[in-house]
Image 1 (cartoon, rainbow, N blue to C red):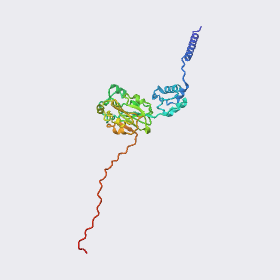
Image 2 (image 1 turned 90 degrees about the horizontal axis):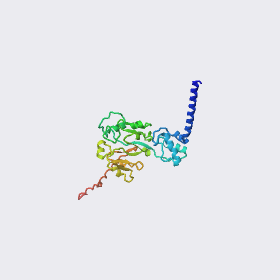
Image 3 (image 1 turned 30 degrees about the vertical axis):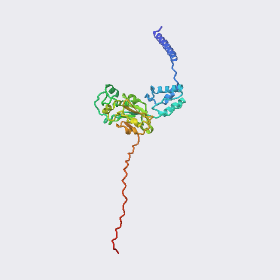
Image 4 (image 1 turned 45 degrees about the vertical axis):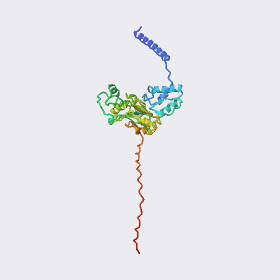
Length: 307
C-alpha cells in the first residue's frame, strides 16, 4: 500500500479523534454566561480602571447581574467613570432602579509646596514615587507628604491630574476627574483620597497627612497639621472633625461648610475649595463723644442813664 496514503489516513483518523475529544470537552466543561452580562458590558465606558472595585468592566457587569438576581437591587455598585447616566442604562437593562449617588472627586491631601517644605536632599534616581518610597523619605524631611514624581499623573487615564511645576504638587481638574481611584491606588503614601465633590464643587479639607507630633511636623513643613485640636472645638456641634494620631480629619458627610475651622487653624492646614471670596469685616467706628449744644450770644446790657 502506498505509504503516502497510509500517512494521510492516519492523520485523518487522529484529526477526527481530536475533534471528537474537543467536542465532548466543550460540552462537558462549558460555562454558561448570562446574556445580560454582555448587554451591560456594552453600555459601560470600557475604561477598565478598576475604580468600581472589580477587575475591568466585564467583572463589573457580572457583579451587577449577580446583585440583581441575589439582592434585587444595584445598591453599592457604581461605575465612577460613567456615573449616574451609565448606571441608569444598566438599571434599565436589568429592570432595576438605581438610587442617585453624590458625585466624588480625587483630593490631594498635601500642601507641602516647595515654599512650605524645603528640600533637604537631592534624588537622582528613577522618577517614580514607589521607587523613592522604597529608597527613603524622598527629597524633603516629611515622611508623609507628596513625593512629587507624578505616579498619579501616569495612572490617570482621563488627563485629570497634572504636576504644578511651581509647587511641585499634583493638581486635580474637577471637571475631568471621574473619581475612578486609579491615582489613589498609585500613590504609595496614600495622600490622594476620593471624597464627596460637594455642592457646587465646594468642600473643606485638611491638606495634610502628617501623623507626627506637632513639634516634629512643624519642623519639616510650615503648613502641617500640629494636632492642636482647635478645629475640633469649633465643630463640636456637628462633630464633623476628628483628631486621631495627631492629625485632624473632616468628614465630608457631616461638614456644614461654615468655614469656622478654616479660620481657627493656626497653621492654615485646612483649605476651602471653590468658595466665593469673603467680604472683609467692616470695622465699627467708636461712637463720637456728644458735643455741647451751642450757646446763643447774650445781648450786652444797656448803660444806665441812657435815652
